[in-house]
Amino acid sequence: MDWLIAAVLGVVQGLTEFLPISSSAHLRIVGEFLLPGEDPGAFFTAIVQIGTETAVLVYFWRDIVGIVRSWCASLVGRREKGDPQARLGWLIILGSIPIGVLGLAFQDAIESVLRNLWITGAMLILFGLILGIADKVGPRERDLEHMTWKQGLVYGFAQAMALIPGVSRSGGTIIAGRLMGFTREAAARYSFLLAVPAVMASGVYGLFQSIGEPMVLGWGPTILATAVSFAVGYVVIVAFLRFVQTRSFAIFVWYRVALGLVLFALLGTGTIAAV
Image (cartoon, rainbow, N blue to C red):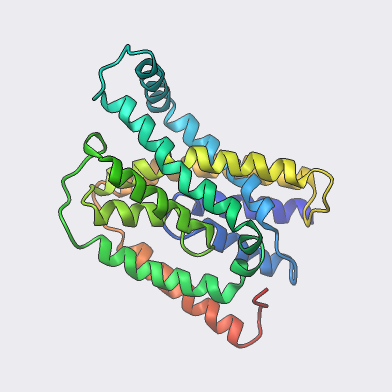
């Protein structure tokens, strides 16, 4: 049974990681139904996210290699100071700092108090509404080549908000990007690239922290969930980037609000437990 549960959670992770609807919230909610009274755990979530981030590495391989090469060349003076690829490398490093610092500083709360489903429901609704507003206001002409250092730092703090289940890593960064005037495609693309260092580091950290510790789901099922999340996640990346070229984020706004309200109803009736 653990293998089936792990496969389902892997599908959920792959479907939701790159959409602005919070993969951690979905894993938390679905996990409550599949494992009544037991949270799959923050470390399970972190490890399974390695699968979806590997999908990012595969899909954006050429972009990532280009960024890394340009960044390395800039260190030895082989690229001009204003080279856009090298700057993007520095901006990704800068944007990865907030989530690393805040993740370590508030680790205990992230793994306990902040996983309360009442908080998750509130974040789903609140940031869903903010996403809707951000998608409608301000200019929509900026691309990643014109990102400033200040904007890179704002992106970083926006990503750090995803430490709270229900906010969404892609949702937070897309909201920030849209409010700063970036196109939907640029905001989505950068949210994928920015997530790679943070999520990979979180997954590896979770991996080492879990060694020797009791797990709700064993290593075998967890590895299966990670593999499934990779396959599903890759398909979602392709579909989502095509979607944002011509469509707004309205469907995700309505979905988040509806899910938050349903979650409140389930909690209020005692159908599922908040912790």
